[in-house]
Image (cartoon, rainbow, N blue to C red):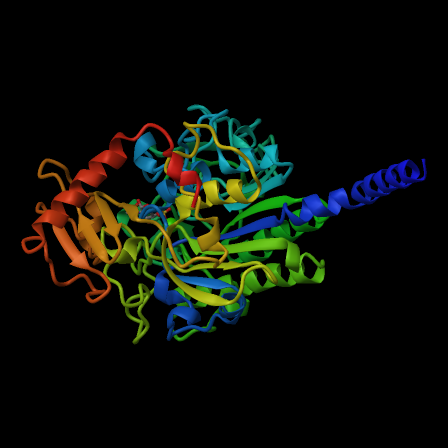
Length: 517
Ligand code: NG6
Ligand code: CA
């Protein structure tokens, strides 16, 4: 009897104790996740990777306090494809994802598997703030009504968006399906083919421009900047580019504050350092490189502001922060902001060749930093990792099972991301206007089909694309600049890698081993 009482007592006690502790226990297993997704930031554009023309103290601190990867990759050398892969765990070519116009329909089908919807299932509140560029609506958007489907239909509880890019119309914010400050008396119309007579354009009124542009960016002028695409109406809703850092940072902080008591996922997608580069006056002259350097300083400030907020709210030890970029760097991307002329000794892609758009390493090898105070030991990792892997890795961390056809390209690298093993991927695909494949130090670039053509703008930008009609092979450890093509010397390896690319292309579901690293 006495023993029974003790046992019953112990059971009651343990139930009470566990009931008391369960929420905390669960939440320490469900850390908040904040992704800082920078636009067009090159490997060498941050201090920790050797930046010369600009200082990035907030990012360097994050790197020092967390894990910084030297071989971290976006999945593609352009924006829409990389974002697509980040959010779906699938390569962009599977859905023919390419750079989208500003009136394109939503690229990710509502109801498909996405990182935010997986997180919602795990009890997270999910939000996206900033550049979207994944399309909105189903083909015919009414910018004056509910703009959907969009982020809400693919797993985001909250959204505050630059709908496409800073250099594309419409130049208005969209918050939860609605244009912010919309005025029914000034209905918004957008057209990417036909000229609308709403605003002046860069061809007829170049005297209105803050920066000269190429022809492609010479349509609608808003805020002294001409953009791609035509737009009419919406005068009261127009954004002011120089205010992006304040507006977007404010929304990101607000989201964090509002959800500080339950697990949240924030995808903070910067406009910086994409064109048009128009720093807020606080940052004009902050670098020695003109606007491109100044917006890097601005981007660093934004990052620091959000980090401080996380710390001040006491969320530091329970928040995983991921900092990375959607593709490599570009100097001239259509606006004459003297990015090339003012570069000095700064190397935007660090020691790597090429940048945004290219098949060389500079296209996808980007700053990749993860910080989780008290859980990740500060270190540098040389593991080969891709953004496509965040999906399965986070799912593994949260014990969320994945279906066979979910995030099929995503590998569970959670132990690599948390710095517990230096082992990364065996193979890593890089998408550009062709495919490249990494294996250890080796880098294979698939021949560019002789019948295909590159976008016109490649030729006059000074981009080193790396697109050749013959296969190329480099050892990127000893030859970081990809100058010494070894394709004729390593024919077996060349064969192995080209076969592997075809295998990846044909893949239909997750491999078992993908989920058990
Ligand atoms: C290109 C634009 C470029 C940039 C890019 C998208 C021209 C000539 N160039 O088509 O300025 O907007 O698309 O950049 O139109 S990304 O980072 O969003 O992929
Ligand atoms: Ca980009």
